[in-house]
Length: 309
Ligand code: AHR
Image 1: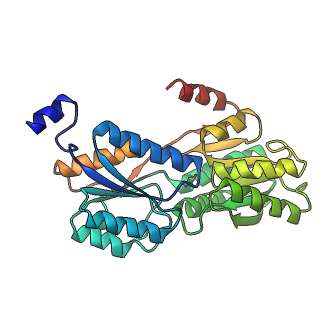
Image 2: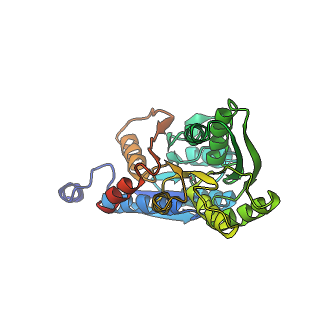
Image 3: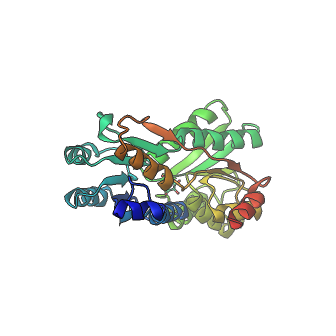
């Protein structure tokens, strides 16, 4: 009778009455907030009970949350890891409890990949390469760069840095002159950029800011303005995520390019859990998400498209 009712209201047999725990990084950026909202909305749509934990950018909080999900015997666990290392023990605990785990967004560095079903994520190295390709083309390979790194030890920061650095290595006159973490937040992005610009004598010799995410780029453009320079013109601004605020800044000419990272990871994650419950046991270990590159050519069009949804 319950199954008939569930079917009648559009819930599949595999998702009905499911409880899923989600260990999220935090709410450090607009992208992260959209990602959390999208997972919550997708769970609601599918009739899934979501137990959501915001770790406030601390891995120890995430590990505690995962242990609590295991104790509550949830049906599946989603983890968006803060950093890559330190996951093996708690993933072993989940496996022993026969609770499937799906990794979202950033990666985990584990030796046993059977500890999770799959990881749904973009290619962070490619994001860094795309940002660098745009910049080296724009500047004909001559540029002094200030880099705002994301969270130290996170695969988003590590991958973006690698992809960007390997690309600019082909251009001897393109150099990162200062690089520091601003933890993926707007406030730190501004603060760190203020310090960097002062250390660079006001920033006149700086050609570009490379921020590992939009939130830090948005903070940095404030610092550039307060230093009396025009972001997007005197200093180019290159970043990742393509959140609405960044697209608006592109339209205003203050950010030059943002590489898109889709926040819509919940749908594919719940699909994987459904397939697992329906009997599929082997998954590709990486389900790659793609994205566009937004510049002044296409940002306004994208904003209009998003607003019409
Ligand atoms: O892990 C993805 C990164 O985390 C996003 O680019 C950033 O905005 C977030 O905080």
